Image (cartoon, rainbow, N blue to C red; front, top):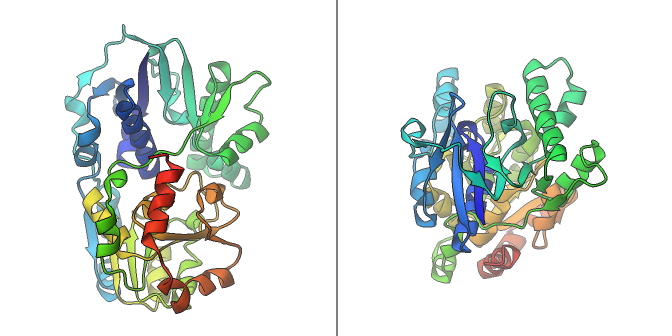
Length: 371
């Protein structure tokens, strides 16, 4: 069978979580002997062909980085509108999409996987396939629109999800990233009685399966916490300073761009009592791995989550994860599901952090992804 995965330039440059998921899936399929074309829709609506092998994915899609600072006071001095614009345009992609070969529109695939619902738009001629499925990431934009009906950009993004999910219902169904996504798609009426839908297995992100035991135990893990994409209001940004200030954490590593108002980022750093902070808006694979290996715990108090790929990355690096039990990603938990701020504080005490076992979490990640 010949497969194709379709994504677009916005996924490669702006939707980091979706990019990681799609490339993890692609890498897994290639390693398991599937014939797969990776197709990307450029900014002009033309479909081009990416041709990476599994070994080159890290260098092509996770190589560049944007370092902001390594001390809280230094970071605060840099926070400005111009800095926000600069890092919003930064990327860790090493691919010139405009120079890729154009897709041969006469080719017919056995299965086409559309990596996001917003790719189903009237002006984009989709590749021909005997079976077409859409990845259901979440229904969060649709749910948020109900609460903010006058937000035009949110309305357009929610409508794009709506069109994509309608299309999936008319084709060969859904590939949902989590059981809760499947339930939310069903609740919103997109799953008709005979619409096929399945939950995707968990894929180890590219590069993380090769981390050896010597790396896990050979690094000095002080009382360091890592935050993954925290500058987003639905990620529990408002809770993080309080959680960290009331803990025995002495250093914080941050990976992630700004996806909220700049004032909220400034408030986070002003409220945080820890000065030893390292922040990369974008991180190469090597840097991301190093930051996870330095940390004992990923603090992830997200209010709403699709899959939670940072949890898999953290576990693969022997790093513990603390997240709310109500997350859709609670199926990823090894054993640490928080129900309150107080529980976060308790698990970040000196005694709890000293009992950290990196090999346990690494084995758990491999079992979770069947590596």
